[in-house]
Length: 126
Image (tube, rainbow, N blue to C red; front, side, top):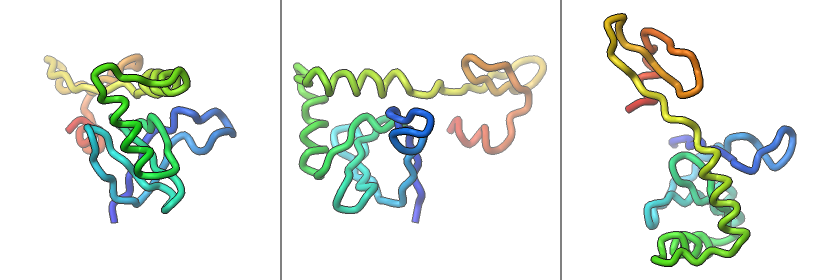
């Protein structure tokens, strides 16, 4: 089984669950999003780019939410719009690798440059 991990944007120190959700559930792709049944029969997480953007109590609700996001007018309730904006704001910065005269440099936005990325860092970039 494959283990999947994605960011919990509602996490606060000691509140609202772990910083990252981890599950062995097989994701279902729907409308450009992944749906994980993280707690079997209880909780369906809607994930985009490694961030849980919403949770629903049924698969039908998860699909309905994605349909709303993909609708031409994107009719979201005020609460839904708030949580989507909050989740998208919490996306981690995407690291890059640059080739320089000093060699390869692994760069994380907002952090110092590190030379010679290790195998794990290079794997994250693929």
